[in-house]
Length: 488
Image (cartoon, rainbow, N blue to C red; front, side):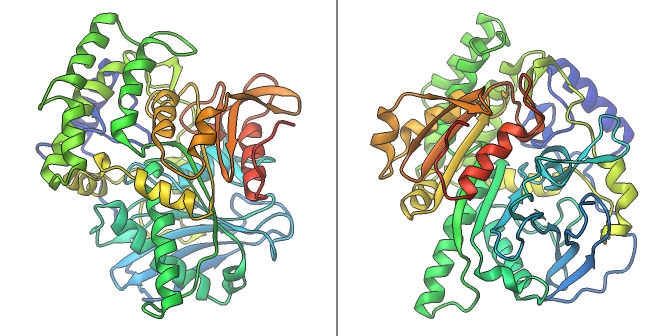
């Protein structure tokens, strides 16, 4: 548990800054995405029972009856033990329709250091948390309607996962996820999925995770084919990234743009925006110069300092007194509802071995110390797009923390075989059952959609008479069927 005095002080700071203390992106020393100068008390996983691990194998609870209550739909949860001291928690839901032939979709939340149970219970899983956080209701727009979905708590130490917390870069995380999937797909309960199409879906820090994981999977497949690595080939066909941090140099100016002009209301005064502009542009010591130095071979300390400076002087101040994940609301919007108490109530039934934590600050600090945040994942994204993997980038227009201005700036800098075609197009209206839900572009096997009225966790929101998650379910279904986006 966090020390109560620290929680109280953090809450007070958050209130002043207009940021919420709970969310995928941690607050460090009062700064969204900050870098700790002195380590504050951190959430530690409480050991509730001795662990009897099975390195290289799964430990599984089948059909717990929790969350997915659709008759006949298989589910499983538990651990893949990478080693005797590194265990990754997963929760798998078979497709409600044709699971034997349905693709396998992986889901990762961001942070870094945040649990994928966020996506499961607040966004796109078979059940959704109720507004009072006491129970769940069946989700008709669950992404497991036509796909087998595997939610993974990673890196080790995140959510229900536990063990040695050694991961501090997206590349390290990719290697552990690859190892976990090798264990998962060799298990007799899931080996039939190895030949099915595979998709990676992720959000937030997933702008790093998604491209890095996908590129790593492709490189491992190449090494397997060449005989230099042993393992199962992963049939990667799809990558989806929502509201993602991919390329800081192109995305950080988006904070300045969005703070002054967005579809809802200005977030701060012109004076605050002018100060942020100075912080961005100042030669040598400004945010732009620091990100550039980081990505020109900068050391871990250079990149970490860039994260600290930019988030202190641009990201945090520009949100004003509004919710960082959903700007139509004031600070600390309670939606989506908290899932902590619900997960505590079902932990033993799903095989969880430690107290669940939304974000592990030790893991986050590992990433902050390497400066991974400021290292661009754009080259990996370009590689994946050019490889033939179908890629969707999506966002919600009410999200500040990874806003559409920054993401669309990033898309404009992409250098892929589809980029010229993409950049020459104008946006088309994206409709769901005839109702306007956003705007989109397609170019080859690359697509982008901006969803109106949605915050950071796009599937958690509704717009107009559309149901919660309905627009997100449509774009997920189209991309998973290997189709470009289209209105219905």
